[in-house]
Image (cartoon, rainbow, N blue to C red; front, side, top):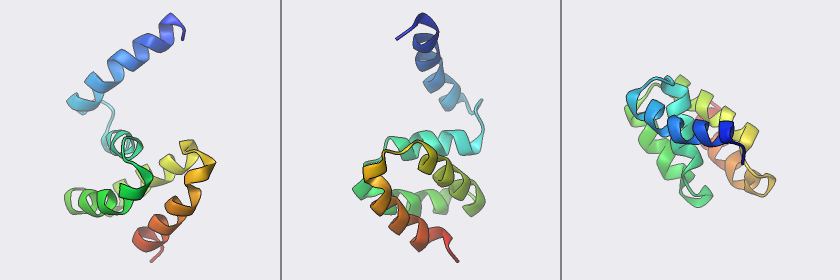
Amino acid sequence: MSKGEESVELVSPIAERSGFLGGSATLLAQLRRTAPDDLDAKVTRLKELHPDSEVRTAFIELLGVAPIEDFPVLRTVFLKHFAH
C-alpha cells in the first residue's frame, strides 16, 4: 500500500462520520461493511432512515465494487427492494 492510499484509508472514516462524503457515500460504506447474508435486513433498516433513492444509489454503487461471488445475493436483495 502506498503512502497516499494509507492516507485515504485513515481519512475516509473521519469524513464519513462528519457527513463530508454525502449520503450515498456513507450508505455505501455501511453496505460494504455488511455481510452478504445480512444485506436484506440492512437495506430494510437503511430505507427506514434514508430516502429510498439514496439507498438505491448506494446499492448500485455496491454492485460496482462487490466480489462476483456475492452477485446472487445482491441480485435477490436488489430485486426485492428496488425493482418496483
